[in-house]
Image (cartoon, rainbow, N blue to C red):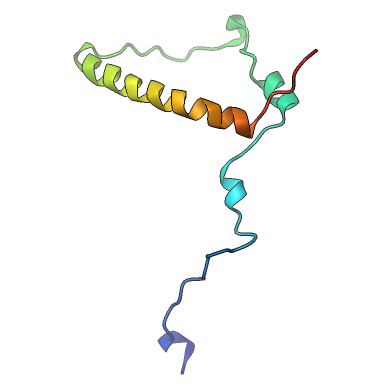
Length: 89
């Protein structure tokens, strides 16, 4: 049987080891995260353009923001478990 006529069989991923699943969730060391999470001084930020919200889309904005806040509340404990912050004494 030639290689072109063989049927394709996807890999068996059940109980697979080394599949790279962990690479889907990036983690940052606490010391790096703290240093990079500080906002830049307003005098150092260059503003190229300012966009005002479209008033006719207010209901859509509010609905989507509500969905974002619900997601944020549910995801926050997961992120804390994944990236614990060391207690500073």
